[in-house]
Length: 379
Image 1 (cartoon, rainbow, N blue to C red):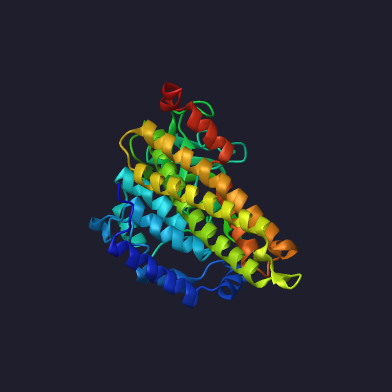
Image 2 (tube, rainbow, N blue to C red; image 1 turned 60 degrees about the horizontal axis):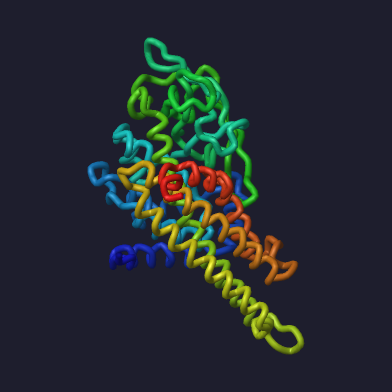
């Protein structure tokens, strides 16, 4: 199978990279992180002008109908540049609308960069289990009433609308009774507590107190919430894997450059064979992770749910292992400076750590992979 990028994909990647290098350097990023909002309106407008916000949106809603491979290209470049804008949160949320074939007006706004979205799935007790939902949705004559609290909602305070998981019936962790809703962040009863995460991103804890939403806010079938949540969360995993590859490329390149310039005993430390071996190990880890991230982007649209789950969990686990190894090696090879905020390497390591924990950590996805029928049959 040919995994070479098309000319259009290569050109898109180059355009995003040029923008990052010109307008989103390390110093600019630090200023954005320190700002009250934690994101940049100018950067968001630039992403819209580049077509990044329109890329995953269907053509009927003013987008480019970009595939997961197209998104992989963009996420790698944003990862390489450590871009902290709410792009991942928005396109992840938009995928729920795409797969539910609902709220086309919102998708049109996403394509034009007019709106930002976020996904509110996690709760205090749930950790990595997306079916562990205590938030309730009580049906009423006009729609539903939401009550509950979501935690660590990435860019939740910067979003205009949220995709919220809630339970209409069943006990916690039941797959039945889960539904998904689109909710305006300015709706009565929605309160958001904004804070900065260790990687410089923004997240929020969001409470829903008797929040009234119309029946049209329900995404997908009344009994199909879990299937939609499971499929789109795998799409989010694919995006995170791609972002991690871009960061690993950047941190490996920065470490190699440091080994070439840092001198000890009158020679660059990169001359020492033991450090050369460690760089070689970092490179191999990165290439293995890249292969799995590419496979994840290919299989995330598979009609075979078991194959999709198996592949995406294998990719997330392998990328998580590589991210941990490469990040730790980079910090060690930089010495004490590897953990200082003055160096991009420290920020890359923090973001890799957060990616490993997002949408299921390595242990979670290894367990999910083993639980798939394909693994048992192969064994």
